[in-house]
Image (cartoon, rainbow, N blue to C red; front, side):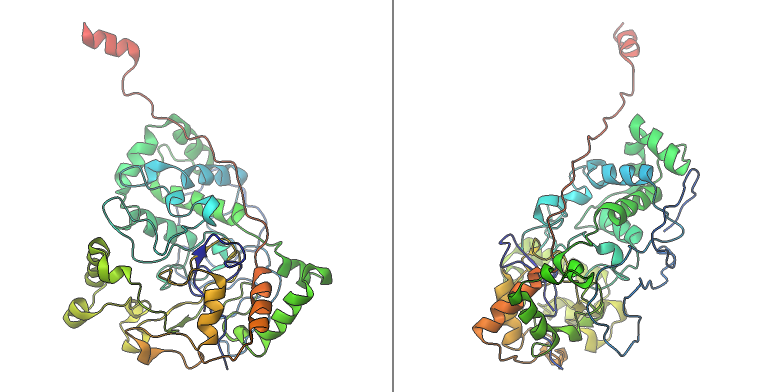
Length: 419
């Protein structure tokens, strides 16, 4: 299970956005003027219903699907994609008014030139705070049935809302966000055209952002896709040797399978605690706040140093230290890796798994899948080369021009006031 971020293209060449398992062994609103596009339709993403896109491993399945080219993006029936909605969502992705103090748009933690993520160990926090986990890439996030490191939400719409309102992320008050957007004539016009809203509604803002991510932050033409679509030359001989290791000796396929190269499950692989947690006062404040807010007991609150991860979903002791297996796609651009950014390069990640993982506060829950691999230096190089095949060219877009606020008073009214 990798994890992510350093901007070294070779070192970063693959592993997922924060927990790759390389080396395992053995929300809705009224729609007024929408016309749906034709991508694959799945269960409602606002309903909390688990979503399984074509070719993805259903919950409870016992057979690991092989790697495959990525199929059409799953689109919920209650939020169809339209060009106007995508354009609005693109604007809102970069819109500072979405954040609490107007400094934390989505792009603050998901920078296009940093892999649509954040190239540091843990994500940028809301001003005056420190975040507590590594920022994952937004690219191909539309294919995840559960998002965030601990799988706390089941749709892009819910993810956008949770991030925008999170205390150490966007920290937004949604009624204030709506008021800000309403003071921008451009947004009033666009929300009316897309959703039929008289005034912008925050729930529809998140639906538009999700539509943008499904339409434009998707990569289906990486070398691995081209190879499985019939182009044998898409992979080098070194990469083909790496693929054999991936499916065989290294057994990465155990957890990194299917079109997204993840089984979407949760594992403790022994990622060590980030040293910053022990020395950074603001980080400790964030950590204790999260422990308290998510319902830890007194002993955990006062004594734990490591991130409990998936434990917070069901409060089962055996889930402490588990995190979701991220996709291997687009990871060339998303280092450092793991949920806390403790591994700086792809080579570090492969070494980590080759040595049988690491140790943390919850090592008694460490997965039995994580064992020494016995890879030679040449084999490790081949594996890294293959992992690079999951990333195509960087996704670049032209940043939209942000609309301005309308003045509360006209010049004539202000002149009258002075008189």
